[in-house]
Image (tube, rainbow, N blue to C red; front, side, top):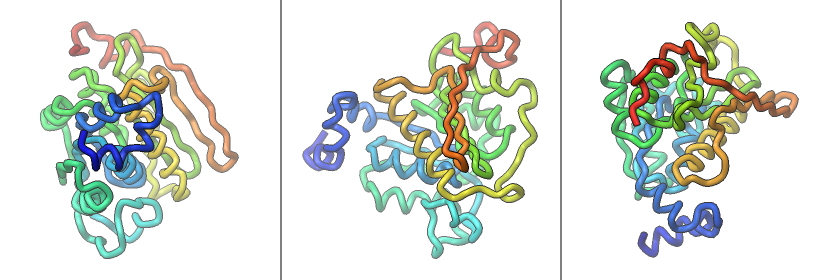
Length: 252
């Protein structure tokens, strides 16, 4: 770690739970962020600012005017640009030392597994169950921790899955088909909500990568932002889960 890095990250290094060792772990880490929308925006910005060395940004979409109410990594002049390119420009302006890889595509099947295998941790900031189930299976297969978040209307949730043997995966939580997919375009979302959930996802990422504190493994954190109420649910692994209960599925 050079003098500029010691200065840039000094406020984190001062924390006994992080220190120089924890900061070096962040600098040596590579994280895949799926989705550069409302959740992915604060996740990417805080991880870049905190000193995660390499970020892989995956999103097929382009910046739209309706995104700007909540997707703070993008700006008005970038309407029409690929979200990954827009996010890269913001992140490098924030921390030019962060290595950014852009994937302007929908990651599925073998391509998804390839990218998951190449990183230390995956952050799911997507907005549909097909992607969530797919990335969960890829993380289980490759033994990678998954930090999951969701937000709609005035409600949000955060969980950490698959980073410890015997703990539930995301599929254990939602079973065979999951809930009915709902989108912000159809149901709306309060702007700061995605910032709260995304920031909590970034916090969980840092905890998992550095070993600080107690991550949300085996727990689901629920937020009712309209009434400022938090709840925590304890989760159990489903012995019939088609993803994590099959012998040999977890690669360690």
